[in-house]
Amino acid sequence: MNGAESLVRTLVAGGVDVCFANPGTSEMHFVAALDRVEGMRCVLGLFEGVVTGAADGYFRMKGTPASTLLHLGPGLANGLANLHNAKKAQSGIVNIVGQHAVYHIGYNAPLTSDIEGLARPMSAWVRTSPDAKSVAADGAAAIAAAKSSPPQIATLILPADTAWNEADGIAQVPSPSQRPGYSQAAVDTAAKILHGGGSQNLLLITGSALTEKGLALAQQIAGKTGCKVMGQTYHPRMARGRGRFSIDRIPYVIEQALPLLKDFKNIILVEANDPVAFFAYPNKPSQLKPEGCEVHRLTAWGENSVAALEALADALSAKPADVKPQKLVELAKPTGPLTHASVAQALAMAIPENAIVVDESITTGRGFFPPTAAAAPHDWLQNMGGSIGFSTPVATGAAIACPDRKVICLVGDGSAMYTIQSLWTQARESLNVVTIVFANRIYQILRGEFDGVGAGEPGQRALDMLKIDRPTIDFVALAKGMGVAGRAVANADDFNTVLAEAIAEPGPRLIEVQM
Image (tube, rainbow, N blue to C red):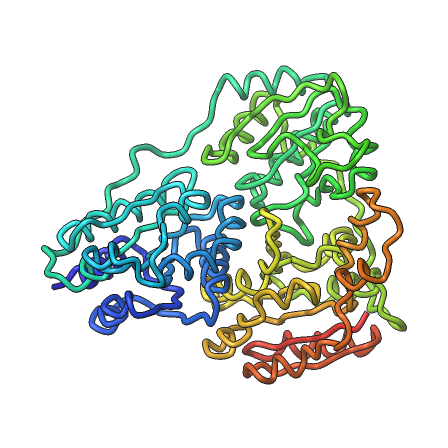
């Protein structure tokens, strides 16, 4: 058994049985080991950003890490943007990155680079295996790091000679040292604040609190105390749809966020971050909370937020009977032109039960939440890190994790072009993903930001940096070239029909929505 085989066997024994891969020369012994070892599903991505994003989506839905296989420093560098998003979402991933043979590194060959230096900003755990006999134990430690609480991105660098030289065998992954808990003192503090505080208190939640059970407990607490429950702007995964507590999110736009938060005296954080603006703007605040508002933490990432909310509900004597009914948007199939509102209604009508929605619609999708709260029960995944090109890879990984669920990917045309290669992987793996591209022919988010930062009126050269035209991108042709059937729609009636057909059919589909 060589080092590569010892690593693959350790991964499989440790519960890592999917490898999203884009290998090169240094990883060929690992590729050969994948042939010899049963139990590892190998999924090829044509760009490393697809590979790392798919691993993120897989973890969000499966709750256990997949591995990636990346080629040297440049391959890792190509995947870093979606590792940034995965890190912000607290996803667990085991990266396997090839390296030159130890004795070859000193010759400074063209692909030589500081791989550990590249890995550290996006990884909580980084190690280079020194020899073949260390590889299995290093792999086990990487799995343990990825499965820790909170989960982590672990990057194991595998020099080529440690992969091909003789190894001792597989290594056992150490058991977690303790189960996630919560602070009783934090619960007591939150209960004291919420008792009698009414609408001046905000319960700001994300992470594991956004499961169906966590939301139900938050709804009981709100019904009992009169506090407001909101989510931060973006979330790793959120249970939504009929029968689930629908909460507002803090708006992305500062001018919309400030009035929503201005009256709160206390904010209790459940895994959420202190509310801050995405960017700095001239003459606008960075912090979104009002002056004098106190912030208290109930749980941090990695703690058991559902158990903490349960304890908080008990301390407040909050029960299901305290829940106040919610008024949801009435749904109807839209007709006529395609607008943000008609697209939202069409989506809400079409989302099938137990679907997974991956949202990178940015501008078009800002109004999607109210109507889709009345859709069939589903999960909603968002971009926590803001690095563009998130949705199509995450949808790919989510579909691998949950093959029995329909995945709907919402993406703007600018964002789609970052990782459009995802469609090829979806076709090769026959994944149940419907990709909806909102083609408004402009980086609309950047046009708004240009105004938001007070940069003045854009001239022609500035506008050329913001528009996606000359030539117009044909997404249906791009999809066809990668083996995915596609249709373009220009009105709401056609969108209703084509969307229903795409959801009903197995395998990947693309819809270009010409706004």
